[in-house]
Length: 143
Image (cartoon, rainbow, N blue to C red):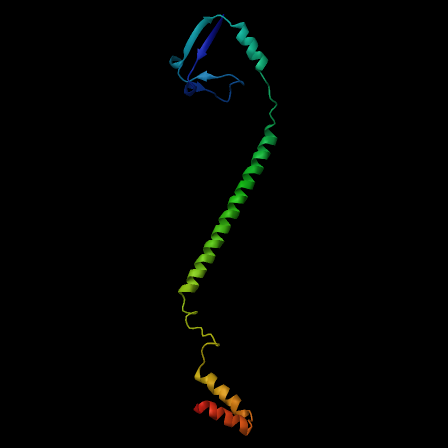
């Protein structure tokens, strides 16, 4: 015959000076006892058959977990930096669009200034033309 104890999990008490597998109770009144229960040998045999003891290597598991956490942290940091870089590029582009620097840039193929025209005329004036070229230019001008 066996005594069975049913404590709620919140009522369990474990201190440093207790042995492995030993537990206490915070409140003895909050524990149910079933006394003198006949042992079910078939249930015990089934439990013994399915019982597995696993060798736990805590140091290796800790190192593996630490490596995984480090890789996750590095990946998150890289993603954060990439987002910051994209944000900085976007802000720089917005600032560039809002600035007046590009507003007054003149495309030299489309527009000319008086200074440019004077330089072109000076270059054209220094070039000697034949009388036939001058007559052709005058005819084109008056037509």
